[in-house]
Length: 313
View (cartoon, rainbow, N blue to C red):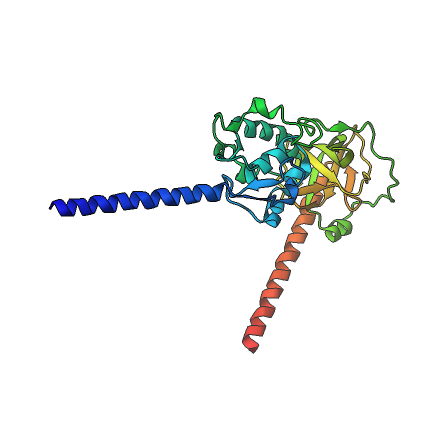
């Protein structure tokens, strides 16, 4: 009986020893320094990253795909620092450096406006709930404000207020096209709204002036796009070609007909803007019914052809 107990005790000590050895091996592995794995973090002051970090490592291409739009927005001077400290922290000895939760929340607040205008969401991979509460080993909000050399942005919350352009760019717009049934059916617009033009603004892109956006007040949505348009609210239209054509004036209410791409509502030369008349509501509805009927006919014909092909085979 005593021998059995001694054997069991010996097995227990052996297991504890193996666990300790395994733990030490993991600790050594966690402290291994590597060359900076992400191109987006090459401007950071540290050139060696501690890998793996507190989050799963990503390939460089996947890192750029997930966070490229966030970095391009330059919504906060610390957004790049946050990303690089999270995914490629500097080698610092025994513990992995990271930001505190309040630091993450501060950066996220800075970026809210930028992401809303760009129809983007804060990445779930950077959910601030995943960051630790204040402790000695993490960088809190107060310490983050002192970080300058790591964060090469263009000022805190540089995207918070868009620079207002006093007048629209001086562009030569083509001849106006009258909105008729044939024109509407041929263009197949993605969205149709009734609303007022409020302002034109350039998004701050750091040293260079960013793209132009229009702010519109929507009174009625006659055709909804994949990008959800709220009624009785403000929306942003992206001017990709640099010229606001057709021209818009603040004192008029317009019927705007245009397209969407990559989760953005566009306003380009291929769009239409006509002064609002009550008759437009019934006409747009009637023309949309015609387009829907055409789509149904095409679908039936396609299905009929497929049945014929199956029968022939």
